[in-house]
Length: 296
Length: 281
Image (cartoon, rainbow over all chains, first blue to last red; front, side, top):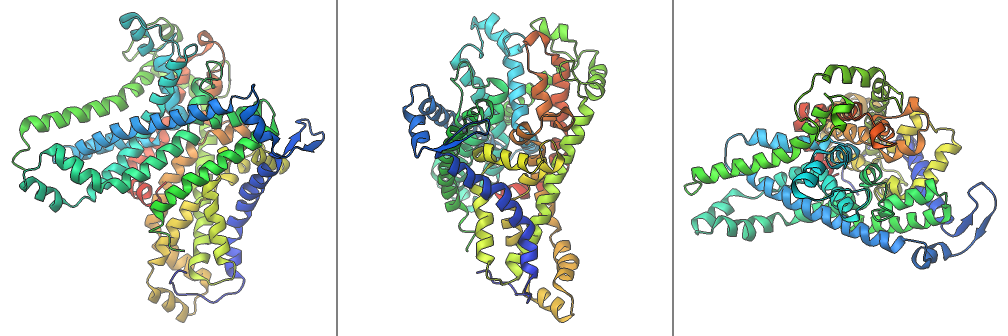
């Protein structure tokens, strides 16, 4: 337990944690328990009867020929990995450049940091506007200069590329800030020693700096996967609405659509439970990074 | 460094400018679009200069909105602001109180409370959409500010941050305030909270942005236009056929939605970096 001077009081601490605990129970635990419960029932969306169906909501997700769940799963994984790879590579490259001893680094850092404040949906709208087949500047250039009939509303590849670009763009600043912080903690003496030893800049980077950045990289890897899996809903909802067809309907989009639009409560709840298990897995990974700080 | 020649330095600058271009160009496009008429934007390729309708478009966006939505941006700005402030201030208050209890008191349910708060990390809105919606609807909180704010103010990261900070408060300060006969709440209000200014500011920046940029939750629980936040408004403005979308107004609205959190980050950059790297979220 924490080592802090302990004040004597009987009821006060309960009173202090009460607001937090009320909200945790009403808006987190209760709904989550409901999701688990509902996932075992077949429910009439109009408030009628409910029938216990055991695991069949789950089984239906994977075996029902009309269910695109497996496809949605695969596309989500590919999507999250693409974002993570693209965004982290570009950010790391820029962070390494901005960390060099040159002029105007403060300016560069500010310019590459502020987009953190851009909302995910706004990033989606910006990229949608550039690539919209009717009004988008880039879409026009692609069509008239390169002969590519760009239309993300009809072509799955186009849709997927556009979503990945928008989401990676959104994550650039976040990754940049953490890579900068990581680079600043690399001891200069080590780098200088390598210079004296005659190691080339490329070797210095891969053999010393990249190794010392490993904790940051690992942390960002998890955070970017979490972002790709769970926080890209606004981009998908705003740009493709899961289309063309259902080809970009990632897991969080599907759980929303099946629940809110199609009113399939059992199926949506089963998906929620699977997502919960995924988050728990990712949080455990993330926890390995922060456990040094939390020592309960 | 001797080997760091002029050419190398120039190349580094060049790379960084490419990075900045990747960030700035998309935003310049929407700024440019917000200064033209709908017809000009639809006549591909759209002009890329700053057109003469800038002022007019923003005025229309702020006070009238688009034809297909009809809600002025001013109302949605107000809603986004209330939501962002409610979430950030709410989070700070309840997290300060909870961390105070967990660090400075020994009570039987202390571990239980700590872990209950920790588990919320694993339950983002996305995984409990329908049942949370049902709770809000049962409580009659659809289309209310409290419905927008309350479920968002639990924060494990905020509690952890304050907990970390409180653990570094010298024991002597706590003891001294006890000997002086001040009550725990006096110690909290007069000593602990003023001491926590730095983490509070850092957290405020991060949580304001978090609150302002919420999308899924307001999408679920607001059906009345007078409660739409800016992001929901933008999405509604874009429904319908491409030719009917008033792109210039949508783009003006998008820029207006982007501005407040950016201003907060730029003005409070130091607190922002601290908040980000220390709350690790």
